[in-house]
Amino acid sequence: MLAQQILNGLVLGCVYALIALGYTMVYGILQLINFAHGEIYMIGAFVGVILLGWLSADFINSVNPVFLLSAAVIGASLFAIGWGVALEKLAYRPLRRAGRLAPLITALGASIFLQNFVMLALGAREKVFPDLFHGASWELGFLHVSAPQTAILVTAPLFMILLTLMVKRTKLGLAMRATAQDPMMASLCGMRPDAVIVATFAIGSALAAVAGVLVGSLYGVVSFYIGYQAGMKAFTAAVLGGIGNLPGAMLGGFVLGIVEAFGAGYISSEYKDVWAFVLLILILLVKPGGLLGERVAEKV
Image 1 (tube, rainbow, N blue to C red):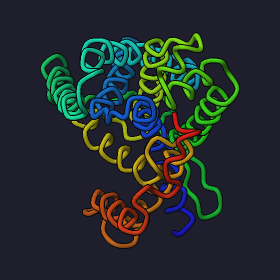
Image 2 (cartoon, rainbow, N blue to C red):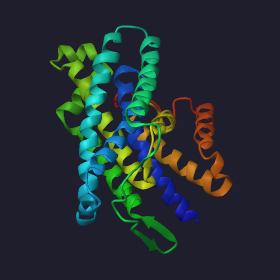
Image 3 (cartoon, rainbow, N blue to C red):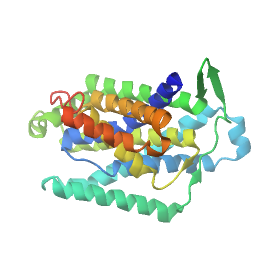
Image 4 (cartoon, rainbow, N blue to C red):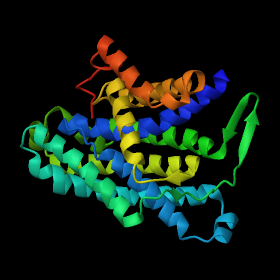
């Protein structure tokens, strides 16, 4: 039971961490809380359903599920990047020199707009995500591990490692760190802060779409309101770990996932969504900067 709850928590944590990275990357550069980020995650999940829905059942049964899931992830990521970049250019860039309140309200408005847009365009009913793995699962001692859980446990850490390497060892990562510290100085050094900000939104949106497709394959359904709940939890994870801090967002996601799994498993599943916010309040009372705090020199 304990091992199973830890496994369930790690799966949840992988999802929260992927989404939280988008929040923390944008905040690290713009000090903006992009509340529409949860809706990008939701759009990614819907794109996965639509792309796989175009395929016939016979075709899905005859093709390797890993290939199908990978194709859905790539397609959803590209679509989500388009939405993320459009949000930055149309909603946030014109307010770059405004105070913090205007972009914050704009982010909330963008979240509501996207949620209602998807509801009107695709309907309010839940959409069924195709069962790519045909219910495959394994019994490992006391553990029951499903194929979608395995996909999440493999895919999410892989993307986290790739993002970390990109930030630490590439020119784009250097530009992101420099822009996060001082946009004007970065510009004087030949970097283009606007392009860096667009790249930040694109990367964060792609990670959210990956999480959306993976969650769709895990639960089997997606709906227009999943972005709000997942977005709030991922934001909680980012704050929990220290918003603006990449390792903090990952740590916050895993801590939140395990606490939620333990709360649902040992106390009450009806209140599983409450534990995220209880934990956030407790952590902020003890350590307002989050578990790892804001490390300005490394935040992106």
